[in-house]
Structures are given as structure tokens and as C-alpha cells.
Amino acid sequence: KDSESKEEVLFLIKKGESLSQIAKNLEEKGLIRNKTLMEWYIFLKGKEKNIIAGEYNLSPSMSLKEIVDKICSGEVVHIKITIPEGWNLRDIAFYFENKGMFQAEEFWQVAGFPAIDYNKALDLPKPQDFSGEFTFLQDKPTNIGLEGYLFPDTYFIQKSATPEDIVRVFLENFDQKLTSDLRQEIQRQGKTIFEIVTMASLLEKEVKTKEDKEIVSGILWKRLKYKIPLQVDATITYITGKKSTKVSIVDTQIDSPYNTYKYKGLPIGPICNPGMESILAAIYPKKSDYWYYLSTPDGKTLFSRTLEEHN
Image (cartoon, rainbow, N blue to C red; front, side, top):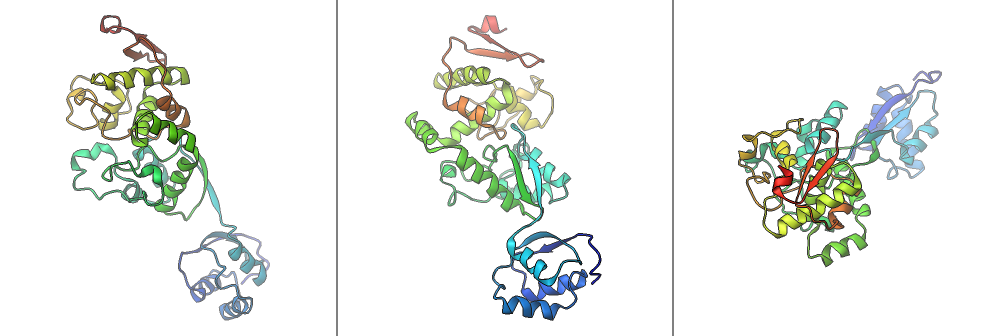
């Protein structure tokens, strides 16, 4: 132990690690002189149950008491992560992979696999079931992943967090944002939370402004009611994974339950993780005479009443 060194070292305490293992690791890292002394100290202070797993910044210049206080305080190293509105399971998983936290695949095993592999989806592992913890997931089909529910926001999470820890943080945030008033309103309309989240995900990807989202929401709910195909381009790009918003005639023929050109009704599940504005627009659509809309390359939305106008 170089007790003069102020240089901080990242020290990880894993979940379920024993006191003797932690003490041994601290000694090996040169953070304490004697592991037995540390075990005795923690034992005498009755703190063996107080140690909290996570990553800590520790330095050899810290006293035994300071180190013990810190690892019992839960003052772990956090990193800031930002999930933008409209990101999907693919975007989120690769974001964590690029941060070096875990593989995209590990995230998908918890949150579900992206739709690009929908035809292979029958062989893919089912997403983890969180519906026992979060009632808002109870109307979500179990074979569909958590696309749509991973609430876009800025989070501070432990660097050592597992995919499951992170998914739980996203879901807790969604749980708070979808207030009981909103849930009652959804129920009053005879809709499910799953339908609202799916609709919100379409609005998030299709249009930019709050006003446009509300009008498009009105158009899409109306088309659903009259059994007219939604023909939402964003559902096609979700299947193909292409970054371009341009959709070819060939693309519209793809056989996928996400394809709203080929199949009537909402896609089989959400196509991204919508923000609050899109969720509210899905719950509170605006009535209009419009049946069609078109987005220009610069993000404006043109509305039409008839197919002629639209064409």
C-alpha cells in the first residue's frame, strides 16, 4: 500500500461477493495493507451486512475507516446516459455496446430482439417478463419485447449495471410518467396501454411537432376505425433497418406483421421508444377532416382530405 498516493483507483464490488473476497481484492490492488485487519474492523463495527455492490473510486491514501465508510455508503461511480426519443431496441443496445458496458445481444435477451429478425423471432429467446413488477405491461403480449416502454431520458446509472438493472430503471421511469389519470383516460377510451404505446411510436417516427402529432394521431385512429390500412412508412424502415425515410414499392410488399401497407390495423408492436409528447398525442388525438398526410424532406407535414389531393 502506497499511502502517499492520492491517485484514485476504480474498485468493483460484485453482487454477492464475500467479505473475505472483497478484502483480498482491496489488498491485491494496494488499497489496504492487511486483509485480515480489514475483516476484523468490519466485523467489530458490525458492518458486514452494510457493504453495497458497485464501482467505487478509492485511493491508497485513504484510511481503513474511510474505505469502509465509502463502500458502506453506496457512493458508487455513476455514468450519464442519454436515450433520445425515437430510438429503438437496436439503437439502445448498440449505444451500450459502444460504451463498452455489455454486448447488444445481452441487452436484447432481457428487452427482446428487434423486429428486423421477426421471421427468425420464433426461434429467438422470449424477452424477460417484468409484468409482475409493472402493471402497465400486463396488456402487452408476452412474445413482444419491451420496445416502446424504455422511456427516453437522461439517466445516471452505475457503470457496473447489468442490462436487467438498466431496463428496470427505464421501466420505473415509464411507470412514473404514465400517471393514473392517463391510465384512466386510456381505459375510458376502451384502449390498452399497449395500443397507445404502439400508436405513440408511429407518431414519434412520422412527424416532428406536437400539433402535427395530434392531427396525425386523429387520422390514424380514424383509419383504424374504418379498417383502412395505416400505410405508415416508418413501420417499413423499422423492418428493413434502413436509415433513409424513402420506402420503395418492393419494401411495402415485405411480409411482416409490422408492415402497415400489407396488413390492416396497428403493427404487431411499437416500432421505437416514444417520448411524452407522442404518448399524449396518441391519447388525445385532434379531430380533423383529413385522411392523408405527407412529410416533406424538411420535416413539414402536408395534410389532405382526399386521395386526389394527397397524390
